Amino acid sequence: MLNNKLDLNSDFSKIYQQGKKLGDWNQKIDWTRLHSEKMPDDLRKKSVFVSKSSSYVEQIGMANAALLLQRCEDINLKLGLAQAVNDEARHAEVFLRYAQELGAEIPPLETIQDELTPHFDALTDFDLIFLSHVYLENLALEQFNIFINSFKGVVT
Image (cartoon, rainbow, N blue to C red):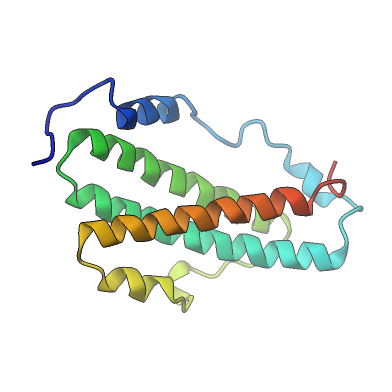
């Protein structure tokens, strides 16, 4: 049986405590840098598409992490999953803000036809939901890596 006693020294608790300190993620971002004349139009269009898509994936990841949080009985894992919900919300927000700064229209998530939602809706086993969430996290890391590498030398 999973543990219902809070262990402040657990890995999940440490992750939660670190995440709690982050506060407002966007206070130090200079969004005016996105309006650089150095950014080619084709890169701007691609970055809007990727940021909108990424925002939707992050929202799905947030809902997925929240579902895991609801089904979890271990208090330490609950703390880690609560931090995951928070992280996914921040990721979705930064991608949306990025697209909006570039003048993109953002349709509501429920109007987007995607393949991820039916996949997660069909899952009932906690382990499968968790593994699917891990896969989403790997995709998100790759998306951030693509952005970082795409704008080297373009936006200063």
